Amino acid sequence: MPEHVDDFLTEVDSRLAAIAADARAGGLDAAIEILTTCITSGGVVQAFGSGHSQAFAMEIAGRAGGLIPTNNVTLRDLALYGSRSADELSGSSMERDPTVVDELFGLYPVHPADVFVIASNSGVNGSIVGMALAAKQHGHQVIAVTSLAHTAAVVPKHPSGQRLSEVADVVLDNRAPYGDSTIDIAVDGSDETVRIGAVSSLTAAFIAQLLTIGVTERIAASGTLPPVYISANIPEGDAHNNVLEARYGHRIKRGLPEPTVSTEPAEPTALTERSVTP
Image (tube, rainbow, N blue to C red; front, side):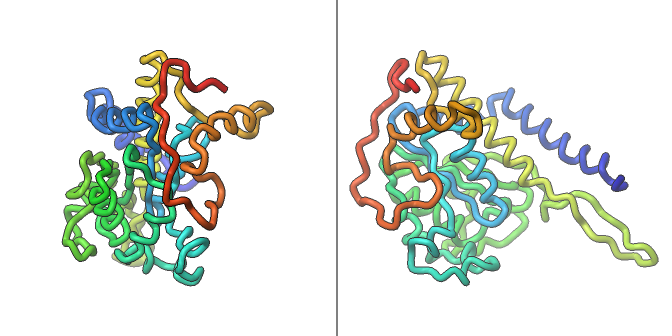
């Protein structure tokens, strides 16, 4: 057994416990209220993350137990349906490039009722800050999931000089430390150590699920059936999900997006009591 299993478990558990305590104390309520209003007004949650923070967007959009009106906004679509080459997807150059945002924003049929949830551990890369600024410029509210410890310790890379946490309407701390890793491993016969055991993906996924739970609880409490996916890998899954997805038409993307996206998105329809019936 790896020597540091319990050490890493302690690092993860302590951070999840802190996030849960924040949630019990109402620390997620502002974000939950924004997301609930978005969905009940017929909006779509646009989730964006680059690098490992793509995992956060995948927790928000298009998974079993998740909300139907969600999109996973991803840089790879710039190569699939935009002007960027596949070669540009390798490395970190694209996520650091603020100029990608205008084209990426245009690949998705964003409606005025939509809200952006943007995850980045550092909160300083060009595409991340650029997407937050673009969303704000188009009149959308922005929720950030970031490491406050890390972002405060590094220099912003966006030309504006801003961090994600400085642009967003609501900021949620993923509790990751500076550098993300938590465990020091000594190198035998040397004074050197290496640091491993990154936690931001785990804590961000926990936040994503808490947001989904909170929104679903509020919609259900209003007497409306929440638009939630069930697993596609159970017999009734596809039929259930297809009915609910059809409500949003081209405004949500599952799998690969269409090469051409309409610039005139369908008008959203507000959820009403029992309005979503599979």
